[in-house]
Structures are given as structure tokens and as C-alpha cells.
Length: 209
Ligand code: DC
Picture 1 (cartoon, rainbow, N blue to C red):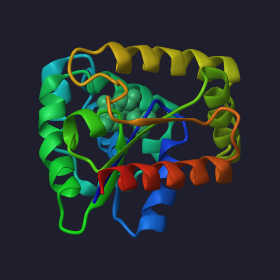
Picture 2 (cartoon, rainbow, N blue to C red):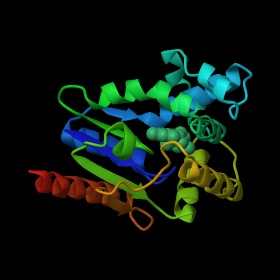
Picture 3 (cartoon, protein in one colour):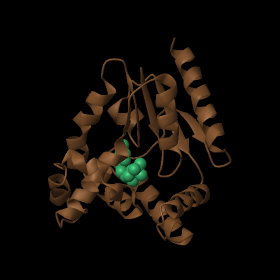
């Protein structure tokens, strides 16, 4: 069984995907982390994330980079969004995501294009979203917990810019898959969002049976 969870930054899709993985006993891949690693490697190489060749060269990052705490920063999220518009980067990361999705026993992946490009045959597709304000507030609290000083205004501006880039890029933009169930998490507490996601997946699986 493959479960695809897509949605914009800080929508709660990562939390939901991890909870679904635990509930259904499936391995989970946070595909945003791969794009973050490319963005970070590009910066470490002294490359320009907007340059297709520099971004492509950064796709050969060491696996140890995936454990770098800097990958979770807002700055790296911005770099990830910039390198992710290049088709060569998306092609370079495709196989790794595809083989994770099609492993025996199934998998759950979260990202932007899982239900549309990486695993269009997924048994259940969720699109997790929330208002920019709710997402900025969540991201702001996360940053405060990590002692990272960022203003809510800067986070809001950054989220809006990334949303626009992710939704309007030519290759694999962030869109709601036709057969996805939308979960709007703005007014929901963590446990409520998780319960809504489990119920949605159960309903989608029952439909497929
Ligand atoms: O989910 P995230 O914030 O960690 O993702 C960082 C960036 O990576 C996001 O702005 C766009 C890109 N991304 C993508 O293009 N496709 C994916 N499947 C996952 C992330």
C-alpha cells in the first residue's frame, strides 16, 4: 500500500505523514529533505541554486548530509525551493523516491508531487493545507523552540514566496491531485489533524476495496 501526502510548507504534512506511518506500520520518506540536501550541498559547493548546472551538480550529496541539522533551517528551505524548479534536479531525485514508494510492503511519502508524479498509483492521497497565517505561526513556534531568532513577518514573507515558486514552477508544480482528499489543518490541534488524516486514509482505502 502506498500513501501519498502532499502539501505546502508547514501545513502539518510531515507530522501527519509520520503519524500515518506509525499507525499503518509503513516506512516513511520525507522527500523535502532530499531537496533540502541538494540546496545545502549547492551552498557548500559555492554554487548558485538558480543555475541549473550548479543545482544538478549538488545532487551527488553524501547520505551523511541528511543528518545535518542545518537542513531544517528556513534558509535551507528557501534554497531547496529554488533548486527544486530545475528538471534535472527532479530527474536526479526521482529514482530514489520511486524505489522507496514501490518497495515490497508499501510506503508513505510526503512532499509536493508524490500523488501526481512519484506515485500516481498511490492507494490513498492526501493534500494537507492550512492558511499562510496558521503556517507562519507554527513555523515561528518551531523556530523559537530551536532558539532560532526569526520574526513572524519574515517567516510569512518567506512562506508566501516559497508557495508561489512551488505552485507555479513548470515541472511538477504543487497541485492537488484529482483523487486526493484535502485536509485543512488551520483550526485543528495536532491530534485532531492526525485523527482526520487516519479517517481520510481509511475512507480512501475502503473506496478502493
Ligand atoms: O517540504 P519541505 O519544506 O521540506 O520542502 C522544501 C522544498 O523542496 C519545497 O519548497 C519544494 C521542494 N520539494 C519539491 O519540490 N518536491 C517535493 N516532493 C518535496 C519538496
